[in-house]
Image (tube, rainbow, N blue to C red; front, side):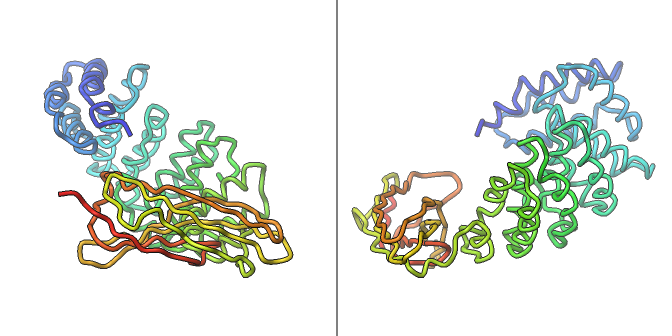
Length: 368
């Protein structure tokens, strides 16, 4: 992932200042230029918020005049890239504080026009929070838009668990509210859009895996050539969690005739920064081929001494009757920003078609 200064850094902020000076006439962009000098040390969203507030200081009061200036800026091909994020946020701020009720609809239309320059998926969340029913009625119309970026905004901006974005209670509490959008786009000609649809369904599966399976089962009955791949991506979390309906839909039936030996660990003591290698053997003892989704689970030790499981994809394969396979894998304990390692007992467990099959313990050492 690029650093914040590489996405919304001095160059992008300076470019925003130039574009707004051209579009804003005599009012200029003094606040944006001042904010551009204060970006160091800020996270990406903090940079966007700082530049949004600067834009609001430079732009005239009232939504109509703000929109007019932003639309003038859109005539400039240089008005593009990460500088657009704070612009979308400023547009929404003006619309939500506007006295004119039509500003709400106008802001959504402007976000649709801005999103080909850089996605408006973060800013649109505040509109959805303010009035989800009204916003979704408009967003639903975008599924027929000729621009793939706008169609993607319809599904990406309404995701229940969109990364970096605020939650929308009107969507998380009613996940079926966005299904008409997904139903209209799952066979979209654009992979960019279809992948967003799959990610949206995966978000739904975190809270309601039965609903996610219900949706993709309906799509499986009316597919195109891309639908099987979309379904696999959409159900990835449900598969990791061993949801029976998700596994069955992808052809992974209960593995009653599969024998597992292992896992065997190369060591029972691992230091943070090292890797743990493990091997296991799986055999189909039945008379028919067995399609297997094999994952492994690390039960990480928490600060309070309890453990929390994390599932990792390992492999999928089909074993013929009587066939045996030996599989090895290495798991890294390299330090990462999204996980804090705690010393002590950990557990590695295998999972075949959603069912835990074998486990082995080890100790994790955290250097002082």
